[in-house]
Length: 358
Image 1 (cartoon, rainbow, N blue to C red):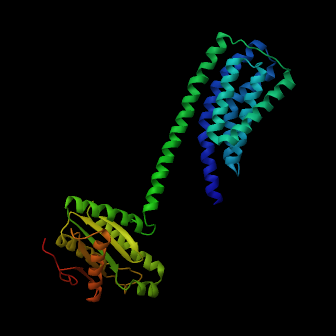
Image 2: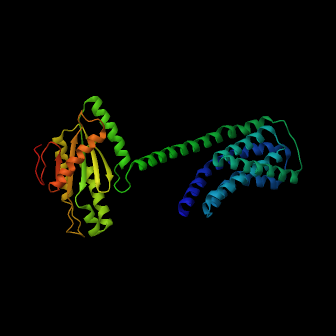
Image 3: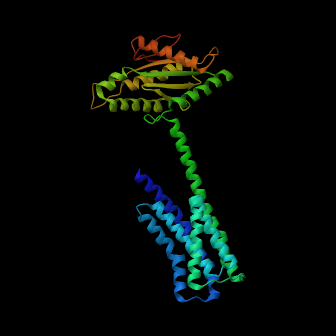
């Protein structure tokens, strides 16, 4: 949990680095133009150039090396705000450079930390102004020169562009993360197939399509024979391996439009659209044979067999539950007839290792 929190903090530090470097660099032009008419002492120029050119890289290293990078980066942003307030008062509140610097830093605080960082940043700006007035005394310069106007133009154009690009990249990452979470919510974690709820939703949609368009589709319910015995004899780790192997075979052996899901426990369900019972039986028989050939070198005595029930969607079904129950009846007929076979209601049990004519 701690490593995950630190990883998110480091990501935050890296995300802030580029906007701070660009913003401080071009903001230096506005501060320089604002301070130039005041002829400050040399140490002020040294502090100003350090703040504009070196501080972004120092802040980045502080964030990376901190055991709590997220909190360290927020402290760095408060320092940004305080220096912004300091230079604003040092320029005697010259309108254009002052508003430009303070508004850009405020925008950065809101984007990075919302209302809380906005308020704390505002207090830090006031603290910086008070510090400057304590050192240099108060002053007021309400006229901006042409040089100061031109020096602020890069800050007014390039910094919003840089911040907008960072926000855009963040939005893309959030969108990808949302898609990943959506996929996880629909997927069984062990097998990677659709989970029970997602498969039932697709069953509802496929049933409606078949009834409205009079198209064909077959449900297959697949049960691993004596799976409880496998778990009891070899342990749940081997049982999980068997489930993963079956899911892998389903992914390999099914057609592109077939929809496979883990219905629960050792039971899997497949929707085979645009398939007849005979076609579905051939597909399921090949699956049964491939799974039956599974061998674990560490457990050579382990054998896996499948019982499979099929049902085609009929117009006399009132709902998808009736369709699913039909396949369930076929499955229990297969299990009661000796297992390790494919069966469909109204058809014959297909005993093991019977080849279907293509």
